[in-house]
Image 1: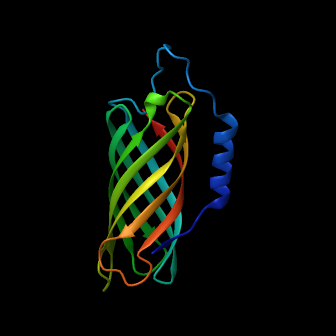
Image 2: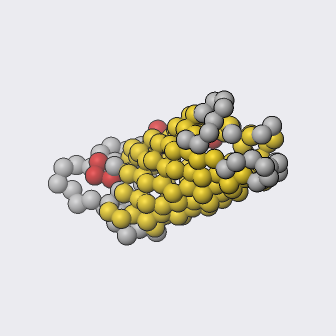
Image 3: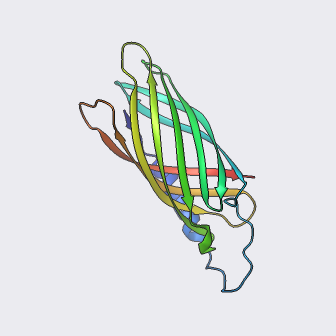
Length: 175
């Protein structure tokens, strides 16, 4: 299963992040609340295109997370691939850490995930593990924009290209 890159969206998001990034807070200043504070909930929608099994798919899904401590999110997502054969559904729990102690509008994040691909018809299901790194921009409220990359490796049987690196662009709301 291969993922298509979205280079124009990544360039646009990176431009917004670089153009609007501020400086770190002065020492001793009280930190303002962030979308990544303990007890906050994140929600997201997944829209993508993918190529696999010789078909092109339109991918739709959603996810949610809960910040168990400042910056540390436990979450998951469910995604369905449409328009190709066989049908594919993903179930993916994840953990992510956002470096909120830095106090910058532009914050690095790192995370890990596991994905189980439910593949219809005569194909065997597949399992992957992965990691992601990136930057999130937040200047106030619960709205964030992120740019990053993910590395994903098949841990179930694999005959060809068993790992991939792909860009990720996110727009999120946390409340």
